Length: 292
Image (cartoon, rainbow, N blue to C red; front, side, top):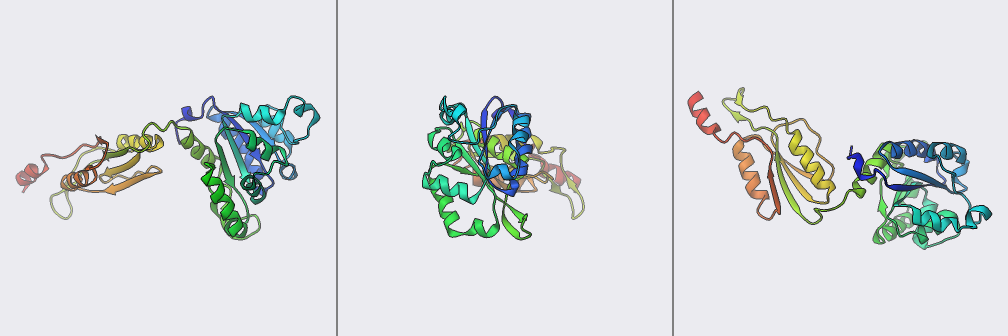
């Protein structure tokens, strides 16, 4: 998971639209709070058919905004107040209808008016039937939003509430939080190419035996993950390890010190930063001669 500091103290306005996946938004509130974010909730009227505002109010600790023409809230221009309050606007789940409204620039409900009035970054998490997801109109709307700088998180693929299989599932709350946290990390390395080495090298003695070291690769992988989160284009050259490749990182697997040497030379010709984290067996050839 991404460092908690990326969203700690951030004000996240969570918008819930009309989708069966709205039940996951309750857990999403908790997940955002767990990493230190302050959360307030906006719901469309359709969303209230799937999960109650009372649930979201209890979890967030704040009244839930629903109506654009609410006499009490709009006496102080409530939708403008929320738009100015938020550091991030997160729509999860984002139905096909809500996506269409955003693309068309409509402002006929609280959520669409709020998004129109907000200068904060906007992220949407689509959730709909797989056929609705692949519909050309939906894809055109998403393309329009992406061109405007809207971040689209997901969707996932799998079994859907309708019983069909395919893309359109809402990402799990923990995945949404991770994706949003990545977006919130300051991009100090944007445009930079970073090459990082990690892990051990293995020098074969015969088909069964080799000389190696105890490097775990964890430090190099952690550095690669942090560099990618900071916006860098990362190439991770790693020896034999059982570690998951960090999101957004290009991985090159090697075994021997010579392979590591060659991969570093090949990948570092135009890099901005070269970090040699991994332990190389630089004298391995001499050792092999003695063993033999």
